[in-house]
Image 1: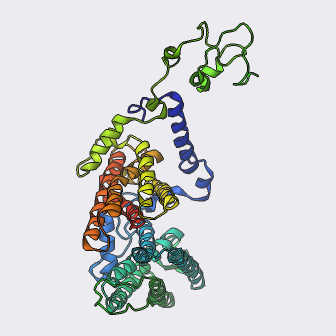
Image 2 (image 1 turned 60 degrees about the vertical axis):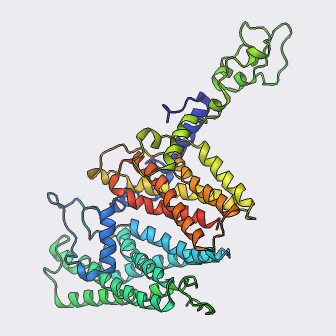
Image 3 (image 1 turned 180 degrees about the horizontal axis):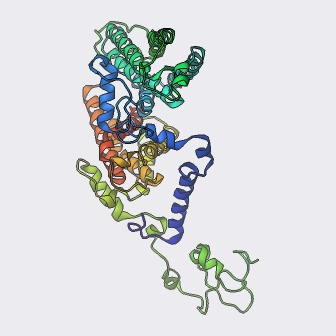
Length: 271
Length: 231
């Protein structure tokens, strides 16, 4: 910044002061935001690359093409976790975050093109998506405590359940063409996401009794008693099936306009 | 303590040099009692008062050469931006472009000052947070290059992407109706152009080539929201 501008010290120091103050509030490790939010853990889940995101979207939409769902371990040391760029089975937070933003913008965009501006077209999807994320997080934590299953950490749960917004956006894109196309796409996408979440959660949930017996977090499927295995299987199955309901609920906010509409045909009310 | 408006003590000559009084270092070292007094110089004529001052644009911090280089880059953003253009945080053009966009939209009977400025500010702050999250020591294993991202650099990169939106606004108010397919095609071209400008400026300054498209997508969404405001 300094070598290009030839400004007076007053203007330059004001600009530097502003930028450094912003950095101090948001990015320094001593500011109050850093005390509330653990930025290092967040940065771990945002360490993604182009190819990683493309492959993840492919796994989301076509989970039957993916073969190995187990989380990999670092080659030399077992305690270093692998970033989402290095291990495709690590959940990341970039895709859910961008998926939620795309979903909200899509819901608001249809009405913007029609030149009718109403704040509730933005606020309703926002509140609904935040509520869905919170309810799923709390519900999953409570259910995993009730079943006696040790689940993945909090941010990973948000990531895994947040992938549904990406699949939902794909289905919403198809809703622009025809309402029937949306229902077919929603059915396929809900099934695909159910399979995805079932196979993702399977290696991650290890019953707590087994954990204590082994002394540490062990490989899944190695030593499981019958009852623990059945509890885990039922739990994962119920979680997978119940993902249909949030997807239908979130899809209710989509705009009601179609591109390939025959002239004279009134648009169907969304829902 | 002497105030800026204190009358001159009798017998002392002074020069009415307002710029020198306001700039801080000179104020501290001013002569006793009178902040306006220059040491040993009598009351000047009209030429001498403005001799020691920087030109107006430099005082305002508007760097025209950097602006010209960045604008020429913005016209054809499909090559890699040089580091000195990308890391330059030139804010005069973004501010002017946003206000000009709002004024042009007044011709279309749309009052969008608040929406455009608020959208730009909040989305740029959010994008800076996202970039700061994505460029960390965890991506250091895949990347080589400098880390520093400043808020003004991000704002400058997003602000130079407003240039295509300006062209679109002019064509919307004067030339084309947006309900036809020509208007839709123009919108798409503008969005691609604006997103490429901002992405090239951001990706070069951060030196993360593997993350270019995943920064391009939020950038494109932000520009799409601003384009939708003028449709």
